[in-house]
Amino acid sequence: MDAPIYIYAATPADSGIISRIIERSIRVGCALDHRNDPRLVNTWVRQQSAERINAWLVDPHFYLNIALLSDKPVGVGMAASSGDVTFCHVQPEWFRRGAGRALMADLEGWLRIRGRPGVALKSTRTGEAFYRHLGYRESAPASLHHGVKATPMHKSLAVPA
Image 1 (cartoon, rainbow, N blue to C red):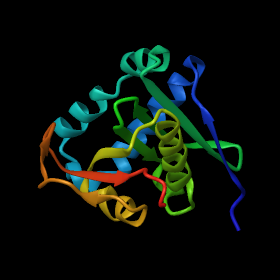
Image 2 (cartoon, one colour; image 1 turned 135 degrees about the vertical axis):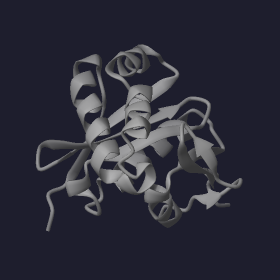
Image 3 (tube, helix red, strand yellow; image 1 turned 30 degrees about the vertical axis):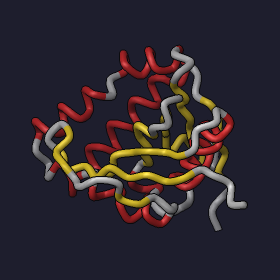
């Protein structure tokens, strides 16, 4: 049995580890999506550069979290106050151990506290089954996003009556 997963709000001191987790997740975990095309990989990684991460960490409209498993940082996620989950990355060797689910539950809780009625995201093929398992549904046809196929998905945060 795996150790408990601990989720915490990221701080500017975490920008380096966030950057490394994202890059490894993209390069290794998302190979199905970018097909090891160096141009696509570099474009995708640049979209989530250390400089951008630092800017997000100090912007109150964004919330970044980190998942620890066995005291190791294994995943990161980010939501915007607009109701969008902009990313959820877990290092491939830690897939299917609950870190992604815990990150998403924390992001959804942050959005729920802010009164958002639902969550929107764009999923790559790698993440679609994961998000469906969490209750997300396709909200529009897939399209190319920075050269990678992405499917818009949505989940209601409304509490059942």
